[in-house]
Amino acid sequence: MDFNVYLLLMEFCSSIINAPSAFWVQLGLILFFTAVLGLVARKILGHLVRMKSLPEWLRTLCDSFYVPSAWLIWGYGVLLLIQAMAECTDLIIPTQYIAKMRNLFFVLFSTWILLRWKSRFQKTIVQRVSSRASATQDQALIIAVGKVFTVLVLFIVGLVVLDIFDVQLTALLAFGGIGGVAIGFAGKDIVANFFGGVMIHINRHFAIGEWILSPNKNFEGVVEDIGWYMTRIRTFARRPTFIPNAIFIDAIIENPGRMYNRRIKEAVGIRYADVNKVDPIVKEIRQMLEKHPAIDQSKFLFVHFVNFGASSLNIEVYCFTKTTNWGQWLDIKQDVLLKIAGIIESHGAEIAFPTTTVHLSQNIEGME
Image (tube, rainbow, N blue to C red):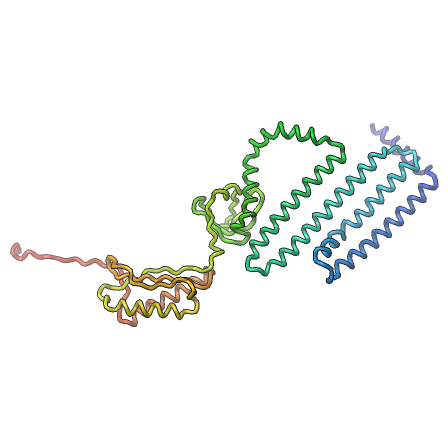
């Protein structure tokens, strides 16, 4: 085998050396024009990329062409050299093979350029929507559309490559029909997780960076990544949790990050001895909340004496803060509770605590 390869190489070198002058002329012209065209293409594309007046999609397209352009031009130059060698020397290369190589080369480089353009254009759009209020949702949708576009492009490219190599698609589809049942049973979880990921991107119940929890599926954390097969969340214990997307199909999802306000709901108990002071205390607490700068006055605000407790007269305080930030909400709640305590104290009343009254009866007649 090695000797045959050696003979083939010797035959190839002999064919090149003994090639007619027309071959060497074509060789020189191809190398010259390839080098010049590659240099000119990079200069023009580099100038277009730096032009701020061009539309964004055109600038990103030129940027996507910049690196592959040299490979594309030199690759076609090599294919022209091979064709010239086949025509001007004794080297036997079937013409149909050269045509297949040219078509395959064009398809692969077109795919490379198209995916580079998609990646750059997607990055530009993501940066553009980053200033919106719904930035995380919009960015997740853009990334999902980009993934679907990539899968679609690769699927079409695969069909085109099969066609280039004269693969009968009818036979392939027939094989797929026979093996589809077995593959379906084996990959039902993969299919379910894939469609679960699709539903996440379509419904947009949550996005990357948002805090979610599920009461019926028992998970809670911040979303770090939404994949086609599973979603990664980071729990508050800082542990990564990987959840198959199929779980989200029937999961109850709470998204606290999209709340408009945070609620303060507290029951404040006053001693029974201060029953005559309840009404002015309730009114002053309500006035305090109506003037508080951190309380949203457009939402429900209730302060009422609601019931007689076991050891206290219970006043319910119900209102909403303007902020949804948890840390700020805790500061506001602390301020509100301390002011309520101050109001109660200013009226000479006291906050009740659980007490038990024991009545002792003495049987005087039975005492000695």
